[in-house]
Picture 1: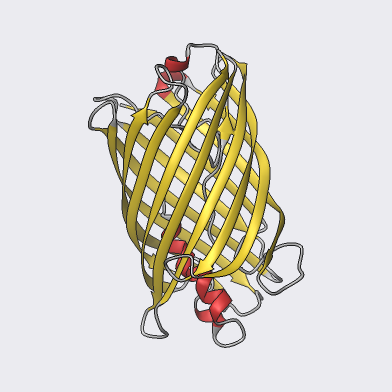
Picture 2: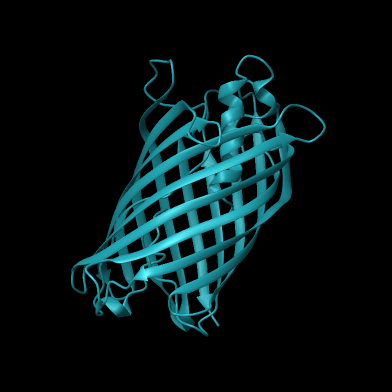
Length: 306
């Protein structure tokens, strides 16, 4: 999955340079969440990683259980005009041990922008970049009060996450994931806390723009049928100028439903939709922040083991 840190600097550029070439490098970023999901099997038999939509569980798989995953995130709606961005990633997840996993990924993007204030019209697609995610599971919820996994994902990109223009981006995501089965066999809860940072420079023009952000999310998922989970999640995002949360730029609150289905032959599919219901950019009285964040976000994941 494309690192949020790579998108964050683009987000900062829009806030920093609004009204003065801001069209060259504004951006926005999604982030992590918190969740709860249910299942009919014992806690150790439920793979919670994918059942929470944007939120992720603490499971990382077992050695020899290599997984291939396709993730596509659609971002729609900004302040005026038409803004459509599709971020996709292909990831190979390789558990090195029962506590540690590596996951290299390559990302792609597609942008269709028209009459968006301070952004040039764009209709283009690119091979975007690559990242390497590492996860360390410190606690297994089967033997501890809750599951706990640490996540770090450095990466680089070749596209500005806000404008869709060619750029050089570097960033990293840092996360703490927790989950717990609330009702055995039926309901599981998860919480994601994350910090991301990144820098972006449009090719041949402009200064390097640096940004960072914090994400807190929570979600619930209920096992309605064998292999079927339905739920809801909420996410709170804050964006800052600078790599160290230097100056507050904007915030957004997202809520939406989630769906997960386990299919034959070890294949699974996960779908989530989130809408921005509250927020605001710094120094404005607006109810939503549609400069740094999107109005709607949709995520589709499909994966399987081999």
